[in-house]
Amino acid sequence: MPGKHVAPVINNLDGFEENLPGYLSPEFPVAVLLDYDGTLAPIADNPAKTKMPVQLEAILHKIAKHPKVFLAVISGRGLKDVQQNVNIEGITYAGNHGLEIEYPDGSRHDYELPKEIQKNYTDMVQELKEKVERNGAWVEDKKVSLTYHYRDTPVDLKDQQKQLASEICKKYGFRANQAHEAIEAKPPVNWNKGEAALYILKQKFGDNWSQEVSVVFAGDDTTDEDAMRVLSGLGRSFRIAADPQIQTFADFRLPTQAVMTDLLKWIADVYVS
Ligand SMILES: O=P(O)(O)OC[C@H]1O[C@H](O[C@H]2O[C@H](CO)[C@@H](O)[C@H](O)[C@H]2O)[C@H](O)[C@@H](O)[C@@H]1O
Image (cartoon, rainbow, N blue to C red; front, side):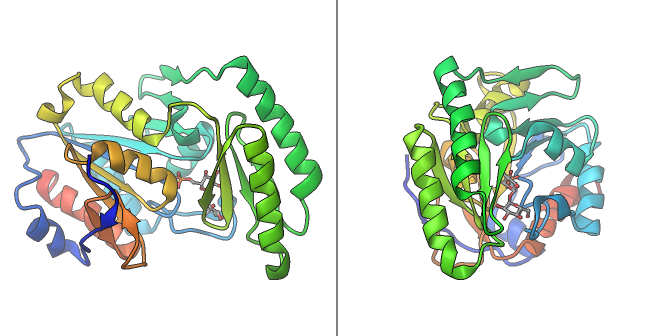
């Protein structure tokens, strides 16, 4: 499997067809798997304040209705949280980095964490709240994974607080991923956005899914790299990142969140228009 690399950039709508001629076609279905924060909605200073750009939201609603388009949102947020924010019926949602999945018919797949990990999680939340929930930093407790937000912590205290928070997460056996002004603590299990993406694709299109459907994945963060890695050579993935030198498993880099709207326009142009 290829490693991370500096991916070619796509800057505008024309760039999609130029770089991926014929990858999408109206006769062949497409699975569109999308991250939420930083991908569908620009990063905001508080998770409660995000909003999808009006044009992007309208296109998303349009493609979601098309019978040849399968849409799933795979987020680090809790399941209900991401459902409320995206608010489109009839699509698949995965929350907590894929640990919780809900299908359009209301059925679910929940990754069952071993009891010991559940206990560690509870203890970790308590210790983080006691020791590092201060100076504007706070713990977003999502019941099976958490996010430690330190955006509002004074600059001179940030490094020391985030380091202590990472150490506490690791002490309880959790993985501490760097995110946007935050640390994502994920349980030590072989399940992540990549495994969730594969699971969703197999459930919908069968074991031979890669022969049955084109796959588009977009994300902006370290946790999205798990999906980009497993889809490498099987689908096409896009990393939203301003840094031209960023190392990624994605096939292409999108330099701004605005080009994300162009990605959805490309899909809409092929299937809907
Ligand atoms: O997988 P995602 O859908 O990208 O979710 C990742 C995390 O997003 C949220 O935190 C991030 O976005 C916030 C709103 O823009 C921002 O204020 C924060 O600094 C970011 O880290 C969310 O709060 C987390 O639960 C998600 O895991």
